[in-house]
Length: 225
Image (cartoon, rainbow, N blue to C red; front, side, top):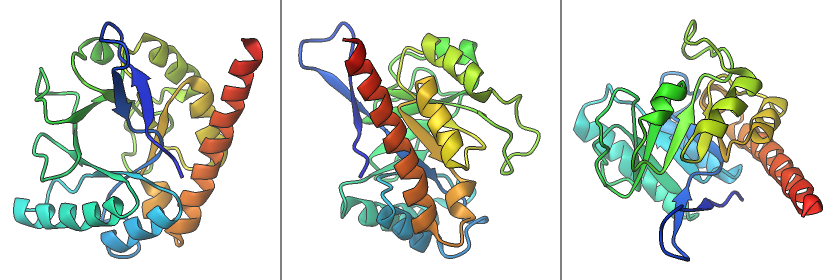
């Protein structure tokens, strides 16, 4: 199981901390899924996923809200968290905003922001975390880029005022490991789970890669103390 990262907040009272997504984070795309979306997410949860970002912004609000309720029920049973893409929380646990705005972000609990370069990172104010994308060329958004690759991801993470999730074209355990080694607190995937014949196996494989890479980093850090 992947727990949320708890990041100390600079300048705030002792003991205050910011809870942010960590581990494997799954973004939805029903048009790529091999079965109904709620079934895919339920299967991914069995594989260890505890963080899901609901996209599906083309759906009518009522239909999207019903889908959010179904996914939140699945996640709540395992202590998971539903993040809703866009400013409308739809009774989810958090929201994730695009790089275009709004600025400053509304305070609706946990808030994430999509970023792609240093300039967008520098616009962050009260966001709790950011995604950086695309790390690799992505089949979901072909031609979207240029890709950061792990070395570019590492450099931007060093500039970021908030914890970062790596996003875009991450489909293999080796790619997950590289993102963790670059400093990402989580790795967000879409196609790797949505397109999978067995979402449970796909999620479990990538979650294991994340956990092993994170554990290795922790051991190395303790060894330097």
